[in-house]
Length: 428
Ligand SMILES: *[C@@H]1O[C@H](CO)[C@@H](O)[C@H](O)[C@H]1NC(C)=O
Ligand SMILES: *[C@@H]1O[C@H](CO)[C@@H](O)[C@H](O)[C@H]1NC(C)=O
Ligand SMILES: *[C@@H]1O[C@H](CO)[C@@H](O)[C@H](O)[C@H]1NC(C)=O
Ligand SMILES: *[C@@H]1O[C@H](CO)[C@@H](O)[C@H](O)[C@H]1NC(C)=O
Ligand SMILES: *[C@@H]1O[C@H](CO)[C@@H](O)[C@H](O)[C@H]1NC(C)=O
Ligand SMILES: *[C@@H]1O[C@H](CO)[C@@H](O)[C@H](O)[C@H]1NC(C)=O
Ligand SMILES: *[C@@H]1O[C@H](CO)[C@@H](O)[C@H](O)[C@H]1NC(C)=O
Ligand SMILES: *[C@@H]1O[C@H](CO)[C@@H](O)[C@H](O)[C@H]1NC(C)=O
Ligand SMILES: *[C@@H]1O[C@H](CO)[C@@H](O)[C@H](O)[C@H]1NC(C)=O
Ligand SMILES: *[C@@H]1O[C@H](CO)[C@@H](O)[C@H](O)[C@H]1NC(C)=O
Ligand SMILES: *[C@@H]1O[C@H](CO)[C@@H](O)[C@H](O)[C@H]1NC(C)=O
Ligand SMILES: *[C@@H]1O[C@H](CO)[C@@H](O)[C@H](O)[C@H]1NC(C)=O
Image: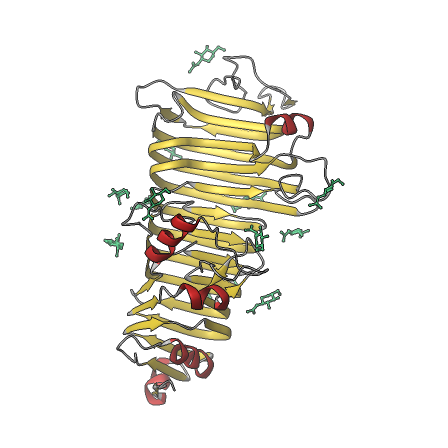
């Protein structure tokens, strides 16, 4: 039924150090190229190159598992069909927030590059979501509207993704799922809606149960987190990004489920330009809960050793933001402070102008339990009218003279915790 054209050029391959090359020929006329691409992933799964240099219309789940030492040279365009009826039950379901994907890329030593484009055809999905309000759940009994992730690097190690443009993602653009040592460089993301429906949930990257991930030298135009560190993201570097229209670089949300342990640690974020955004450098953690079965707070774990350095904000609502009572009623947090700790957080050279959306507030660090070892140097932030207010709650600090931890609780107005370079105000 499907014409498979795989040119195996072994002579060329030998010269180029691959055993096999699979050049996938597009069928054209809107026919589904998914089966041909999957066939290439099977034939060229080891010491091989897969060439995607045409325009491919894809209406079949792309499953690339068990790859080893494979180059995927994408100089053309992979465009997924906006076929909600097909994709909702048939995209690959992953065990985090009901996320599903069009393309599961898995194995070791995978190199995806080539200057090409992955087109998620997101507009139809955003418009439908806006109209129906359906959050896009797969799994369970709801397989009627699942918005897939265009590219998931899952159960993988030693992966490099470079020089790729991603447009129109129905959901998160990239998901790093249960993987180790993944680097993204020079990725150009554009999830911009041309209707009144927002490009909902169009995160640039979500990282989950993964470590040693680098994201660098990229531009992101979207309408949700630029980069989001979900549970168990460790040893991450994010640098040289221009984010526009996003919800910021976000740790979390974490601690939503009682009985679950969420860890985000050893994250270095450097040289970020953040424009027209809801947040700049953000950490969001749920409050506590009295219920062992809670799905709205009460989880444990920690956020530790996070540095936000050389962060330039323009028209950003909350440039520097910690909320350890995220999506939790204030009274609940007071009685049951968060059981997920936040410590060793460093802001270096966070500069620029807020949007004024929060009045003169440019810094808002609110912890329901005590947050320890929070430092800020080189902070130069103002609201549009030139004023600046810095809110802190439950930030412990280290006394610079005797190096004792000083438990500030909620500071009196005008008190400057030793390791912050601004004077704090209590929340009103
Ligand atoms: C996942 O889907 C199930 C079943 O449809 C639903 O009950 C649950 O709320 C969804 N979870 C999220 C995080 O969307
Ligand atoms: C990914 O790993 C998980 C957990 O080890 C496993 O359940 C799942 O089947 C794997 N998925 C694929 C497509 O390899
Ligand atoms: C990480 O992956 C890259 C690309 O495959 C590889 O060159 C490098 O050796 C890997 N690093 C480690 C520590 O395994
Ligand atoms: C990114 O891609 C968009 C859409 O294809 C394009 O308009 C823009 O020029 C690209 N930007 C960069 C920096 O490559
Ligand atoms: C999106 O939803 C809003 C609010 O319901 C509605 O006013 C608007 O027309 C919708 N836009 C589209 C493209 O469906
Ligand atoms: C900072 O990131 C921008 C991209 O947003 C890049 O053009 C610039 O070269 C980077 N600066 C340094 C010192 O790497
Ligand atoms: C940022 O996004 C806004 C709204 O989508 C757009 O008008 C503007 O051109 C974008 N700026 C850049 C630098 O891409
Ligand atoms: C995160 O890692 C910790 C420690 O290994 C583990 O106990 C916990 O179950 C993990 N959480 C998730 C959500 O995978
Ligand atoms: C803190 O995180 C950074 C960035 O990932 C890492 O280089 C450093 O080793 C970490 N420090 C500790 C004490 O783990
Ligand atoms: C959670 O536990 C509480 C108290 O034990 C109970 O009232 C509630 O019905 C439980 N909720 C769920 C979703 O199981
Ligand atoms: C912080 O900014 C100052 C002034 O621009 C600069 O000298 C210093 O190198 C920056 N610090 C870091 C760690 O980049
Ligand atoms: C911070 O407060 C101290 C007094 O506690 C005051 O001397 C200093 O000028 C204030 N700094 C700023 C930037 O307002």
